[in-house]
Image (cartoon, rainbow, N blue to C red; front, side):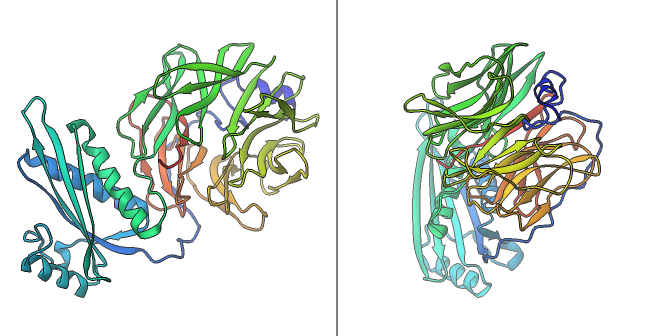
Length: 446
């Protein structure tokens, strides 16, 4: 593909090599991964209920529902069905009485490693009532209560309370941050425009960030989660890279070189911004030092280069180039040296995303004329196709724990956002509104 075709694809609705391959005719899709499950043993955990105390009956049930889904999605715990094991939890209370001890013993005998329960209620007048929630954790290995958390806030943050409790559980048992409070940024169609939105990692609490009536594309998070950096396309001849502050909506232009400036990617420490620009006539990769504002050209090649993604260490970049004829993945050091080709199988490989653990690079691969997700190890020794079926699967982005991917797909006819485990199980659709939702980007952990 020539450089002209590479750039002009942005105007044709088929955003080749830039992480969005467009909407093709599609039907139902069978989606699965051929990867193996993580080699760690999941911890069996049972949720013994979040009981409503002094509040509406739905309160505890809603928190419990969100908590269970968070626990399951964490892939750290194996969520067990306590009633199915014959464990009755109505007498668990605060976990200090004889009834609670009997439940603990029974759970331990049934192989349940962790019991979680709690209570929630309202405090204050009806119009200004706050929600109070208490959560408790019993560990059968140590045979003791190992955690108790108390949360308070308005009814609007009930889901956040459950997310926070789930993240506390993940951190207690892994020492790593959970993902329940992470966010996903994405692009949604609004008339003739494409605007930026942010939602919770489970698809709830959507918030629109831009409303300027132009094309705002390919958002990427800053390491501190305060900003999104993205491509802003205000007319046919001008495509800049902008940044927006989520808390205030303040927005400014970061890159405004002549020509098209696309596919921005911030380094893990936030000190460098890699991007593609055609301001010197060809689509090449550049690196902006965000502290000094100095710009360094990284690639010098007559073919088109774009879509950089940083390694977790910040020492390397994976990118897309058609210097071999069709779009393929290449690796290089972050200063532009040591360029080498990574993918050789297939005639189209694009939109790379380096996993936070560094062990995989996800990307869009064309298999039998279908655009699917694949992963490859950075040494090129392991490669797996992740998704199959009809429709276009595009724009993979990793969860900060490396256990999930979010991506867009036209599997159901329209472009929507989906989550899938890194081994391909438990695909979950996250967006249901609108006709086009694409280019998801998963935030760092809080």
